[in-house]
Image (tube, rainbow over all chains, first blue to last red; front, side, top):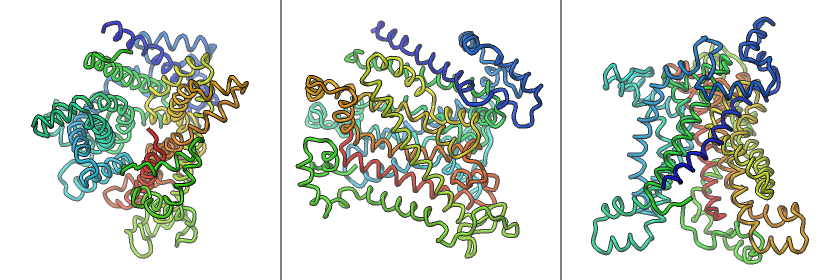
Length: 313
Length: 300
């Protein structure tokens, strides 16, 4: 088992290497002078020269790539052009709201979507199944921010029940924390829910036809017992995979959601950095988030090997 | 989604060689009835899509005014007889802007879908067939796919000037690796088949093998994937524009109109409501067509 896990870990190294190089190349392979683009339309030649020297853009390309990779490996993602703070510090400051938002959204979606998917599979072809599947396809057709504004309009503006926007850290009390986070998390979880429900249904349909499920029913176990105890267990691997793969969608949704609800998270940091063309910050955020994504999927891969001894790569 | 009787595979079969004769036999029977009953959601999606497409194309003849004409006196006017969907903070007509905005969203969706497929097929065919290239290219594709699509598109837009063409470029690049994967997987399994081996034994050259034996089998899965790419591209265009890194503000697109209305959520919710509803309906329709095609063409 251990060699397999090691093999999976080693396989992520080239992926992360390509991510780091892509992030580097983003700035250098686009047409035009990056220093001029970053400096903006009203920059003086001195400003441009300063940015060029500050980012090391005056050195040969290969040297720059080497320096960039070396810095990344040492955990140095550069300094923000706008605020002058290290990119790692900025990302650290903004991590809280994003983690809170995504974790809550994942919890909501898994807790709701898996039972819905199981139900849809069990009652395949019935109106329950159809309703759940229509809900699911609508879920990932919905523009995230539009849904967010609809929820704000109904719950905050019309009913006045929840705050329109803003963020309260957990340290200020769980009630305020949840009140501010529930609408963003609900907004964000919809796509994810749609994805998970659909995958759960498909995976369960594959399992429900198998002999051991028929046997379990035949020996008189309750449907709940058979579905959740036997079938779901066997059908869980694809569901876990989609939770990992869907993280990319989730993080994209988080960027938009944070913007709608004015949450001071990584998404806001990115959007602000893009408006200010603060490229070191953009590069740092992409690198960190892609790293988290790769790591998450690595954990899921390893989990597979531990959960299912039949799996051999 | 609905039941998949053998007859519903006719279109898919028609695309792959072999069973072409059987397909033509079943086709008229499928056309006559059954299609609506078997794929009600797909028909609904197609109908909805046709309506929206028509509205966007025929926008000048549907009671619209110039979508950019300012009428300060009608600032934030509520939806009513004169302004069907209300007016924005500059007194521009939201109904006209929504119909004209549809042109941009649909254009972006279709072009991104087609371009991603074209580049993906090219790269996928070549890498799937030439083992030596395969390792390098697939590592690059894996790396690109590890970057969430929206972030990659946002980063590209930060460097490119805001224009519809650049939005399309920024959305195509993250989609290419996903198409390459599908193409490559099919090529890898197809190239081991007897028909390909036989063709090669008869002296067929690689381009001919790719064209005659491999490409036709890819048509069905790629049509389905292209539909889904089209749907997500329309959403992503709106996200980019909404975040201020997409279509330039002087061209109305659904994302743009909503971005400009965000400061007025409390006072003029209609600025966001109507374009968003059109976007949601369009994306839903395209996704329904995609699901229907997947059933019909028996993909996966």
